Length: 257
Image (cartoon, rainbow, N blue to C red):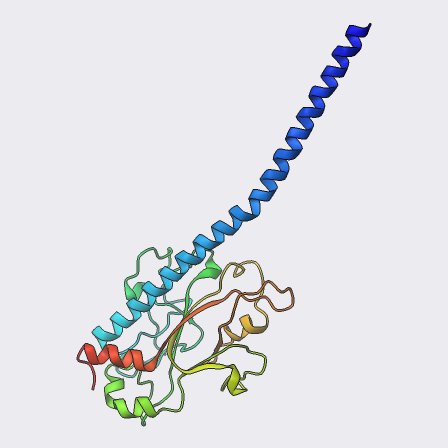
Protein backbone atom coordinates (compact mmCIF):
# COMPACT_ATOMS: atom_id res chain seq x y z
CA UNK A 1 0.00 0.00 0.00
CA UNK A 2 2.82 2.35 0.92
CA UNK A 3 4.62 1.51 -2.30
CA UNK A 4 1.45 2.24 -4.33
CA UNK A 5 1.01 5.61 -2.63
CA UNK A 6 4.67 6.40 -3.33
CA UNK A 7 4.25 5.56 -7.01
CA UNK A 8 1.08 7.72 -7.21
CA UNK A 9 2.88 10.58 -5.48
CA UNK A 10 5.88 10.21 -7.79
CA UNK A 11 3.59 10.21 -10.85
CA UNK A 12 1.81 13.28 -9.53
CA UNK A 13 5.13 15.00 -8.87
CA UNK A 14 6.33 14.17 -12.39
CA UNK A 15 3.15 15.66 -13.86
CA UNK A 16 3.61 18.75 -11.70
CA UNK A 17 7.19 19.08 -12.92
CA UNK A 18 6.01 18.74 -16.52
CA UNK A 19 3.31 21.37 -15.99
CA UNK A 20 5.83 23.74 -14.42
CA UNK A 21 8.30 23.15 -17.25
CA UNK A 22 5.63 23.80 -19.88
CA UNK A 23 4.49 26.93 -18.07
CA UNK A 24 8.04 28.24 -17.85
CA UNK A 25 8.60 27.46 -21.54
CA UNK A 26 5.39 29.29 -22.46
CA UNK A 27 6.47 32.32 -20.44
CA UNK A 28 9.92 32.30 -22.05
CA UNK A 29 8.45 31.98 -25.54
CA UNK A 30 5.97 34.76 -24.82
CA UNK A 31 8.85 36.91 -23.63
CA UNK A 32 10.78 36.17 -26.81
CA UNK A 33 7.82 36.87 -29.10
CA UNK A 34 7.91 40.64 -28.64
CA UNK A 35 11.65 40.98 -29.21
CA UNK A 36 11.42 38.75 -32.29
CA UNK A 37 8.53 40.80 -33.64
CA UNK A 38 10.48 43.96 -32.89
CA UNK A 39 13.48 42.55 -34.73
CA UNK A 40 11.32 41.84 -37.77
CA UNK A 41 10.01 45.40 -37.75
CA UNK A 42 13.53 46.74 -37.31
CA UNK A 43 14.75 44.77 -40.31
CA UNK A 44 11.84 46.09 -42.35
CA UNK A 45 12.59 49.64 -41.26
CA UNK A 46 16.21 49.21 -42.29
CA UNK A 47 15.13 47.74 -45.63
CA UNK A 48 12.76 50.68 -46.13
CA UNK A 49 15.56 53.16 -45.50
CA UNK A 50 17.67 51.49 -48.20
CA UNK A 51 14.68 51.35 -50.55
CA UNK A 52 13.92 55.05 -50.12
CA UNK A 53 17.55 55.96 -50.73
CA UNK A 54 17.58 53.86 -53.91
CA UNK A 55 14.34 55.46 -55.06
CA UNK A 56 15.73 58.93 -54.40
CA UNK A 57 18.87 58.11 -56.38
CA UNK A 58 16.75 56.78 -59.25
CA UNK A 59 14.67 59.97 -59.35
CA UNK A 60 17.80 62.12 -59.31
CA UNK A 61 19.40 59.99 -62.02
CA UNK A 62 16.28 60.42 -64.14
CA UNK A 63 16.49 64.20 -63.65
CA UNK A 64 20.13 64.25 -64.72
CA UNK A 65 19.35 62.23 -67.85
CA UNK A 66 16.09 63.91 -68.83
CA UNK A 67 16.49 67.46 -67.55
CA UNK A 68 13.37 67.17 -65.42
CA UNK A 69 11.80 65.22 -62.55
CA UNK A 70 9.35 62.44 -63.41
CA UNK A 71 5.62 62.81 -62.89
CA UNK A 72 3.95 60.52 -60.34
CA UNK A 73 2.32 57.32 -61.52
CA UNK A 74 -1.42 56.82 -61.07
CA UNK A 75 -3.50 53.76 -60.25
CA UNK A 76 -4.07 53.18 -63.98
CA UNK A 77 -0.57 53.84 -65.31
CA UNK A 78 1.08 50.54 -64.33
CA UNK A 79 4.01 52.17 -62.60
CA UNK A 80 4.74 54.59 -65.45
CA UNK A 81 4.73 58.35 -64.97
CA UNK A 82 1.35 59.79 -65.91
CA UNK A 83 0.71 63.11 -67.65
CA UNK A 84 -2.58 64.96 -67.82
CA UNK A 85 -4.67 64.30 -70.96
CA UNK A 86 -3.00 65.95 -73.93
CA UNK A 87 0.17 66.71 -71.96
CA UNK A 88 3.65 65.22 -72.16
CA UNK A 89 7.20 65.96 -71.07
CA UNK A 90 7.25 69.12 -73.17
CA UNK A 91 4.58 70.68 -70.93
CA UNK A 92 5.31 68.77 -67.72
CA UNK A 93 1.67 68.76 -66.65
CA UNK A 94 1.25 65.66 -64.49
CA UNK A 95 -2.01 63.78 -64.06
CA UNK A 96 -1.57 64.11 -60.29
CA UNK A 97 1.28 66.10 -58.78
CA UNK A 98 0.66 65.33 -55.11
CA UNK A 99 -1.42 62.16 -54.73
CA UNK A 100 0.29 59.64 -56.99
CA UNK A 101 2.79 56.82 -56.76
CA UNK A 102 6.50 56.42 -57.35
CA UNK A 103 6.84 55.72 -61.11
CA UNK A 104 8.95 52.64 -60.46
CA UNK A 105 8.52 51.19 -63.95
CA UNK A 106 9.64 54.45 -65.56
CA UNK A 107 12.64 54.60 -63.22
CA UNK A 108 13.58 50.98 -63.94
CA UNK A 109 13.55 49.96 -60.28
CA UNK A 110 13.87 46.28 -59.45
CA UNK A 111 11.36 44.29 -57.42
CA UNK A 112 8.18 45.94 -58.64
CA UNK A 113 4.81 44.24 -58.23
CA UNK A 114 2.76 42.77 -61.08
CA UNK A 115 1.47 46.21 -62.05
CA UNK A 116 4.81 47.98 -62.08
CA UNK A 117 4.66 49.63 -58.65
CA UNK A 118 7.29 49.52 -55.89
CA UNK A 119 6.03 48.27 -52.53
CA UNK A 120 7.71 48.97 -49.22
CA UNK A 121 8.87 46.03 -47.02
CA UNK A 122 5.36 45.49 -45.58
CA UNK A 123 4.47 44.53 -49.15
CA UNK A 124 0.69 44.88 -49.26
CA UNK A 125 -1.04 46.68 -52.12
CA UNK A 126 -1.62 49.59 -49.74
CA UNK A 127 2.14 49.75 -49.19
CA UNK A 128 2.99 50.97 -52.68
CA UNK A 129 5.47 53.81 -52.40
CA UNK A 130 3.94 57.20 -53.03
CA UNK A 131 5.56 60.19 -54.68
CA UNK A 132 4.77 63.88 -54.99
CA UNK A 133 6.49 66.62 -56.97
CA UNK A 134 6.11 70.39 -57.03
CA UNK A 135 3.87 71.47 -59.88
CA UNK A 136 3.57 75.21 -59.49
CA UNK A 137 4.98 77.88 -61.79
CA UNK A 138 8.37 79.56 -61.38
CA UNK A 139 9.31 82.74 -63.26
CA UNK A 140 6.30 82.32 -65.52
CA UNK A 141 7.24 78.73 -66.47
CA UNK A 142 4.45 76.27 -65.67
CA UNK A 143 5.50 72.97 -64.10
CA UNK A 144 9.22 73.69 -64.52
CA UNK A 145 10.36 70.74 -62.43
CA UNK A 146 8.59 68.15 -64.60
CA UNK A 147 8.93 69.92 -67.96
CA UNK A 148 11.91 68.99 -70.11
CA UNK A 149 14.54 71.67 -69.45
CA UNK A 150 11.87 73.61 -67.56
CA UNK A 151 14.29 74.44 -64.76
CA UNK A 152 16.74 75.87 -67.27
CA UNK A 153 13.94 77.98 -68.75
CA UNK A 154 12.94 79.20 -65.28
CA UNK A 155 16.61 80.06 -64.51
CA UNK A 156 18.67 79.18 -61.48
CA UNK A 157 18.11 82.56 -59.88
CA UNK A 158 14.34 82.25 -60.08
CA UNK A 159 14.42 78.68 -58.77
CA UNK A 160 16.32 79.95 -55.74
CA UNK A 161 13.97 82.89 -55.22
CA UNK A 162 10.69 80.98 -55.55
CA UNK A 163 8.62 81.47 -52.38
CA UNK A 164 7.97 77.79 -51.81
CA UNK A 165 7.87 74.27 -53.22
CA UNK A 166 6.38 71.35 -51.27
CA UNK A 167 5.90 71.93 -47.54
CA UNK A 168 7.06 69.43 -44.90
CA UNK A 169 5.57 70.00 -41.43
CA UNK A 170 6.30 68.52 -38.00
CA UNK A 171 2.54 68.40 -37.34
CA UNK A 172 -0.60 68.75 -39.41
CA UNK A 173 -2.69 70.11 -36.55
CA UNK A 174 -2.74 73.66 -37.85
CA UNK A 175 -1.67 72.99 -41.43
CA UNK A 176 -3.76 73.81 -44.47
CA UNK A 177 -3.41 73.17 -48.17
CA UNK A 178 -1.11 76.16 -48.41
CA UNK A 179 1.31 75.65 -45.53
CA UNK A 180 2.15 74.31 -42.08
CA UNK A 181 0.56 77.11 -40.07
CA UNK A 182 2.93 78.30 -37.31
CA UNK A 183 6.50 78.75 -38.56
CA UNK A 184 7.75 76.51 -35.75
CA UNK A 185 5.99 73.56 -37.39
CA UNK A 186 7.58 74.06 -40.79
CA UNK A 187 10.51 71.72 -41.43
CA UNK A 188 10.95 73.03 -44.97
CA UNK A 189 9.00 74.74 -47.73
CA UNK A 190 11.57 73.92 -50.38
CA UNK A 191 11.09 70.20 -51.05
CA UNK A 192 11.19 69.55 -54.79
CA UNK A 193 9.82 66.04 -54.38
CA UNK A 194 8.72 63.61 -51.68
CA UNK A 195 8.80 59.81 -51.53
CA UNK A 196 6.41 58.35 -48.97
CA UNK A 197 5.88 55.00 -47.29
CA UNK A 198 2.62 54.50 -45.40
CA UNK A 199 4.35 52.08 -43.04
CA UNK A 200 3.29 49.01 -41.10
CA UNK A 201 -0.37 49.96 -40.63
CA UNK A 202 -1.08 50.90 -44.26
CA UNK A 203 -3.32 47.91 -44.91
CA UNK A 204 -4.93 47.61 -41.48
CA UNK A 205 -6.12 51.07 -40.50
CA UNK A 206 -7.66 54.11 -42.13
CA UNK A 207 -5.50 57.23 -42.26
CA UNK A 208 -6.30 59.77 -39.57
CA UNK A 209 -4.78 63.03 -38.40
CA UNK A 210 -1.25 63.56 -39.69
CA UNK A 211 -1.41 60.39 -41.77
CA UNK A 212 -4.50 61.73 -43.52
CA UNK A 213 -2.64 64.97 -44.24
CA UNK A 214 -0.14 62.94 -46.30
CA UNK A 215 -2.93 61.54 -48.47
CA UNK A 216 -5.13 64.58 -49.08
CA UNK A 217 -3.61 65.49 -52.43
CA UNK A 218 -2.20 68.92 -51.60
CA UNK A 219 1.45 70.08 -51.44
CA UNK A 220 1.65 69.89 -47.63
CA UNK A 221 3.07 66.80 -45.89
CA UNK A 222 3.85 65.77 -42.32
CA UNK A 223 6.99 64.03 -41.08
CA UNK A 224 7.40 63.22 -37.39
CA UNK A 225 8.33 60.47 -34.97
CA UNK A 226 6.30 57.29 -35.10
CA UNK A 227 3.51 56.95 -32.54
CA UNK A 228 1.24 54.10 -31.47
CA UNK A 229 -1.17 56.51 -29.76
CA UNK A 230 -4.66 55.17 -30.48
CA UNK A 231 -5.96 58.70 -31.03
CA UNK A 232 -3.08 59.87 -33.21
CA UNK A 233 -1.20 56.93 -34.73
CA UNK A 234 1.62 57.75 -37.13
CA UNK A 235 4.09 55.50 -38.88
CA UNK A 236 4.49 57.21 -42.26
CA UNK A 237 8.08 57.58 -43.44
CA UNK A 238 8.97 60.47 -45.74
CA UNK A 239 12.09 61.21 -47.71
CA UNK A 240 12.27 64.61 -49.37
CA UNK A 241 14.84 66.33 -51.54
CA UNK A 242 15.16 70.14 -51.54
CA UNK A 243 15.26 72.11 -54.77
CA UNK A 244 18.90 73.13 -54.36
CA UNK A 245 20.05 69.49 -54.41
CA UNK A 246 18.06 68.87 -57.59
CA UNK A 247 19.62 71.98 -59.13
CA UNK A 248 23.11 70.85 -58.13
CA UNK A 249 22.53 67.46 -59.76
CA UNK A 250 21.40 69.10 -63.00
CA UNK A 251 24.39 71.45 -62.95
CA UNK A 252 26.72 68.45 -62.58
CA UNK A 253 24.93 66.77 -65.50
CA UNK A 254 25.27 69.86 -67.68
CA UNK A 255 21.50 70.49 -67.66
CA UNK A 256 21.86 73.80 -65.79
CA UNK A 257 22.35 76.69 -65.94
